[in-house]
Length: 69
Image 1 (cartoon, one colour):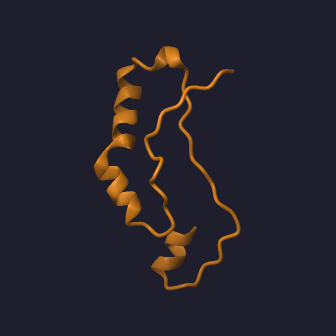
Image 2 (cartoon, rainbow, N blue to C red):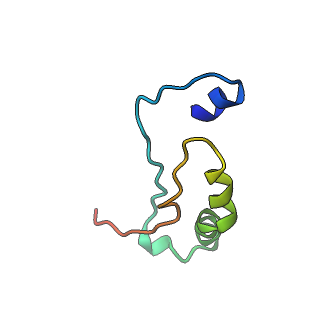
């Protein structure tokens, strides 16, 4: 919520941090729609745009990791 507050000149007090994950089944990783989405999320252009927003940390944006169910 920092972005809307910054846009109107309000001070902001963070009370928590949230991570956003994209989860998908590994057997779907060849789906062209999913590959396009992952490519977009990993792009330098998106990371640069997010980095310009207040309080967005892009240091792990686009990182893929496998987990067991």
